[in-house]
Image: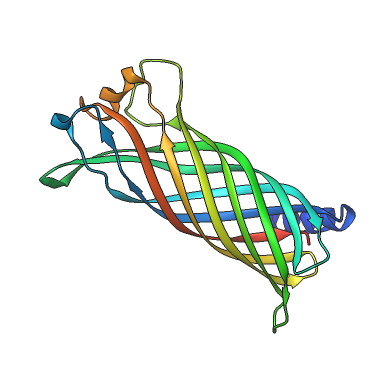
Length: 215
């Protein structure tokens, strides 16, 4: 019942504020890491992990008069499972893995191409986003400083909106992105059981589904 009331409220809000938009998305991605160690003697390999998350986007659409229907600029907030994992060369079955939770915020820009005439009106969206996440919870890991683990991110994506009413659409999308986890030097050994990793970039490829409220 509460979810139904929320949907009605957002649809009504978008009718009152014509250019206002709101997206809520669930995300599932495969994240492949490429950790870098401090020396060749401590060389490590990454692993591929499934990660889950949810993103809230609130913004405004600027209308266009050509093939480009509009450009939307969003502020986004996300919550995401965080997985940090390494393997040693020749021992790929043993994974040192830490799983926790991260919270993030960023900016998102979407280029909206005009509706396609079909049984269900739909728009095609190309976009990109950038921001940073903070790891807020890593069970059984004690960090030596109060400075959090920061993870800048960049994503590019394509989405399809399938409108079920004038102000409500279902969203399906595909996104590709890059994370770069930043560690404090004194915390590396705690995270990786004494193996010092100096950088932890990862490539993420995933799917998104959700709801769009607005144009």
